[in-house]
Amino acid sequence: MSTLELNPEFEALLDYIKHNRGFDFTGYKRPSLMRRVQIRMQATDIETYRDYIDYLEVDPEEFSHLFNTILINVTSFFRDRSVWEYVEKELVPKIIARKNLSKERIRVWCAGCASGQEAYTLAMVLAEVLGVEEFHQKVKIYATNIDEIALNYARLATYKAKEVEGIPEPLLERYFKHINDSYIFCPDLRRSVIFGRHDLLQDPPISRIDLLSCRNTLMYFNAETQAKIISRFHFALNDGSFLVLGKAELLLSYTDSFVPLNLKSRIFAKIKQENRREYFMGSSHYGEQEANTQLEHSFLRDAAFDISSFAQIVVDINGLLILANEQARLLFDLNSKVINQPLQELEISYRPVELRSHIDQVISNHRAITLNSVGWTITDGNIRYFDVQITPLYDSRQNLLGVSIVFTEVSRYKKLQEEVEHANQELEMAYEELQSSNEELETTNEELQSSNEELETTNEELQSSNEELETMNEELQSSNEELQAINAELRLRSEELNQANGFLEAIFNSMVGGVAVLNRELIIQIWNEKNEDLWGLRSQEVLGQHFMNLDIGLPVEQLRQPIRRCLTGDTRLVEISVATVNRRGKSIQCKVSCTSLVSKLNEVHGIMIFIEEIEPSP
Image (cartoon, rainbow, N blue to C red; front, top):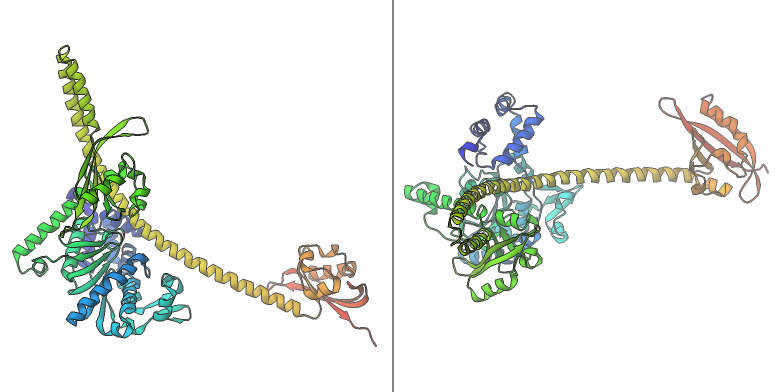
């Protein structure tokens, strides 16, 4: 971001935070950072950054709310399962083989550990390969984050049932202890995990690391800051050790520092370089200058790829679409969902030209090929022409990684060629007209150049918007987890209500007499099993019916006056004896008790009628 684009008041706020609380956010991407600060400003009814600085001076507790808003801690156990399978099967055995020779401890760094799930995932993966006893003796895991609140939560090693859903059942039983509604991580493994506050930009990196995991953390920083952090990671790792990044991150321009092992899973291995220690320790001015130059070059390579005026995609050796720059995404309507998908399943594999056979040819012959003037008819009937260049990509050891496909639009040149040919045919008849046409072409070229510059600016803005969408996706994931927790609580309340209803039903059914509960309109609400036995009507047949309309052996008309007295509040209890006929046609004598259903406020809500058969005197 250039100086002209910086908001002076916002930069003053960042400088105030840095000098008063030691949090340096100057390397973060400005659009997403400003949006999250404005969330706190809206919550405190503050409109300007200058007023917000004054508010921070008056209320120091606001710093905690601000940092919780800026620092998004979204993580889970075994997030992206395929990554952890690769780490367990490919990386850990290589680390163990190397360490068995040197007799040194295995050192792992989980940078940006959030609330600890990823650090404990690393511990379980290593313990599965080494065994718990050997893990305790040989492994040390350093888990760092800038957010103290998240670190305190991680140190407890205690998680709710929802948070451990991603853990395979055998590992959950082996490494967690279930107490009440919580799961506590195994103490033997917990002792080997060290949590600490660490700023990736200001604090020196942890050294002699064999495996470094930093997933979906770099995407919050701008390109220059990312380059500095990557250089620090390179310094921290032992030669040949491994770096694991998130799906939204890729070391496109660091081929002199890292070699990709699995691009789909974003796993890389360190390449040994000279003078890296001098860059961090400051012992050599020449070493520092050289490192700064490398960082600048890396930044330029990243920017050049994405804002290139030519559409370009990268396909790996397995036929997966790995990269697409801004021009390619606009030209072929590509979105983030198609990244890491097989190219043969996408429309771009056969339109505007059949790419699959040509890619196979390049991979087989290890030679680049160029397809000239490929025509493509677009929706409005116009034809656009492209030169398509397919070039093999190699790492520093000349191992084939995949292919780069560049689409260079030559429609303008085709048009110029046709116009020149037409002009040559009429040269003898209209030389002056040809000269006028040339002047028009020069004007057109200038306009096209101006349009191209505008498109480059638009590409940069679209890239920034895409990064903001990734951040918003993390926020939505956090909100979704909160909604799921609320849903679980509602289910629990429903279960408690069902239990209460079942308990109430059991009470009524256990009574020796018939029980009928009526509301104020004399609509039947409850009809127990004794009533079913006496009158032969099931509860499903009478619930919701008017009590006085029942056609049973009970003379309900004789109950009208007692019921009315209970409803009006004249009395709470009326008992009468009536002659009835039960469902078997037998004449019996029943004692009927009408009781008012009264609330704490003495309001009558209904009537409970208790019917008990009176045994005849001997």
